[in-house]
Structures are given as structure tokens and as C-alpha cells.
Image 1 (cartoon, helix red, strand yellow):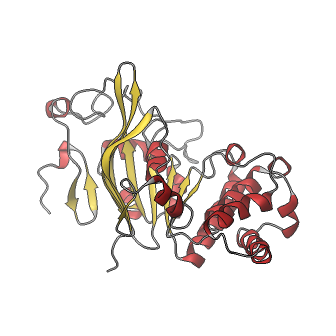
Image 2 (image 1 turned 45 degrees about the vertical axis):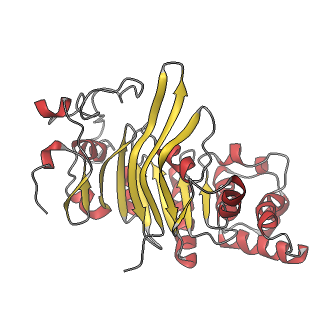
Length: 323
């Protein structure tokens, strides 16, 4: 079995506030195998995007990385210098951002934005080779050659997202982090973008960490899934097993949220609101909203444990389960 390409160990990302540190990511541990599609899912405010940016070392003040390790093929991205991490970004680990329009430069043509990152890493690459590479990337993400001379505002939302994908794969990285790449798109364009992402992943053999809150999308695209709540992992397992038999009550409630075709007009939400991370509840942070809470849940924080082969859960309901 191949070694994990990405290992995140006890990662903690905080935001400094006047009332003290806000623990947006609090001790997350996960791994990504070569060529794997891993999904990270949770409600808004669960820490997904904060985690994604931390993996790229893009956390900005008042946010800061409090501790932990991010090992990319053995290299700890937390410890390397700023100059070294600039060489790693795009070349070995790349980001497809959440908002394509806000991440693309509005006054630069598409071709210049694609070439810019390549030129920064491969300074001796001749102009003709850069142009050829740029057109190859546009073809890979199913964009026409004439779009190279357009500006971002001349493209549709789906096209802009494909440009971001072309930039992300421009140096054939080992890992791509896709942070809600379809959040602002209609369902038809969502499907087209995800199909393109899947085709690119298969052709390059790259690993993908897909960040989002759409459980239906996760079910169709990823192989393993991690459920994040209030900065902590609640459950990790293969997507097939998690959807067939969820272990954590929060996971079950997330899966039940999408509307059913059989029960029209019936919308199910998770009772209550996510906790305030400046003053989280004692014990398990989910216990005020949990339908299966016990007296122990409000006292002790559950640790993430492997209760079945490949199935990890942070819940007191499974603390006595033997492997």
C-alpha cells in the first residue's frame, strides 16, 4: 500500500480576538492517499475553508496556525520558510478557490493569469512553450482557445471556475484542494464542472480534497469523507459506509437535510445553531443539538477513535466498541 501523500496531524488554527482566541480548527487529524478523492463536509462556520487555507499556508491575520503538522510527501509545510512554501504552492499543492470571480484578476486576460504562475516557477521556460502549455490547459478543462484573450467578466461562472482549475493543474501538483468549487453555480453547471474536475484528476493521478457542505455532491464524487463540526472532526470513513450507516448523530442529521422527492414540501434542518467558538459548550460541542445526548456528553470531550476498520468517530456512544 502506498504511503499517504498528505498527512494532517493535530492541526490548530485560531483567530485572535479582543475576547481571546477563537478556535476555528481545533486538533484536526486526517490523511489523503495518492490519487484519492477525499471530501470534507460540514455546516457554514465549521472551519472547512480555514482548514483549506491553512494547508496552503495562506492563513492571514488575525488568523494564525497555533500548532500541528501538515506533511506533504514528508515535507512539513508548517515549518518551511516563506520562500520555500512559495515554491511548493501550485507546483506540489494547489487551490481551486471558492469564488472564481473574486480570485481572478479583473484587468488581466485569462492567458496571462494562467501563464503567470508557470512563469514564476519555471523562469527559463521560453514564451512559445508557455503559450503552448496555456492552450493545453484550456483544452484540458474544456475551454475554447479564443477564451485565452478574454477578461474574467466576459466569461460565465462555470467558465471562470474552469480557468481556476486550469491554473491549479498548470504544474501538475500532487494535491488539489477544491474549496466549494460549485457553490455559486446552478445545478447543471455544477455537474459539468465536477465532471471536468473528475476527468482532470484521473488523467493526472492527482489527489483531491473537496471542501463543501453539499452531501449529495460528496456522495457522487468522493471516496472517503470527513465530517467537520465546530473545528473538530466528528466522523471519517468511506463515503459508501458513512451514507449507509452513519455513526455520529451529526452526520445522520446532515444526510437527512436535503429535501426528498417523495416528501415534497418537507424540509428538515438540524435543530439549534452551531456553537459560538469563543465560548463553546462543555464536553462534546454538539451535545446541545444532539438527539442522543447523555449526561456524559456535557462533561467529557470525545476523542476521535477508530471503532471499526477505517471508521473513525468522536462520540461517547461508541467509546466501548472494540475493534
